[in-house]
Image (cartoon, rainbow, N blue to C red; front, side, top):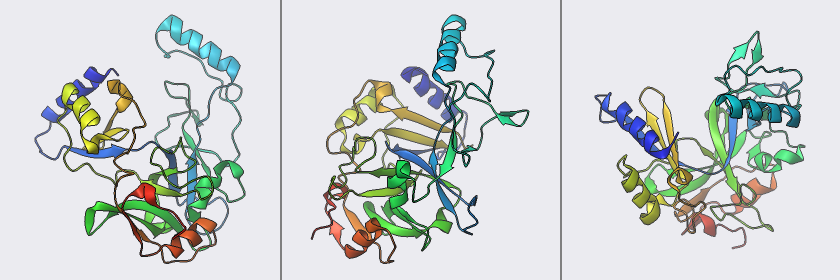
Length: 294
């Protein structure tokens, strides 16, 4: 959807609702999506962290799909063979909630992908940074969130996995998507999870193309990847900086500049948990200033 059309859509949705609280604005973060689920494939009796993994078509099918889209200006009517057209995924892969099914099998979306999840296991090197922020032995996860007693300040704290069950989260840190928030270093990587919708925008800009551009470009609070509007009917509407022709990442991001306290007092079996326990009670002037050598 084009930027102006998207903003017009938001305005229409807003005018059709009588409540002033129709839109709740949330920061959009550039991270890796995860999911905390009670689905237990390993008989461990506890929630598991799942990492996003979409089933994608193989090269031959992708060429055929793009050719069809180009000639028909649409993906409607394209015939998929779920058994043969897609790259293999682990046996533990499951389709995401909301994925349509036909004859008991998941159906690709308009991009030719089938969104899904795989469980994060500690011995899987592909998801080593995911596994560093959870400790299944003690049932805890390292989470970044606003402090309850001071919303202008963040905290990294250990949260029981059971409290995060059925929520989606994002992984941020040193080795994630170019580390736009400046966390850690190669020698001492820092990672944590952020629950979707947990970082609100206190004074969001008006839903106007020019004012949004100005807010992203000039306001210190606008140094974020984008905004997600949470509508009262459950609809989510996202505006990315690139929709407005603005670059990302930005230097000195809003999130990376927030003061951050460490509140991790439960010892875990992972190196990252141990490092954060050593920092328990410390406050840093900025999130990106966190380091383990005091």
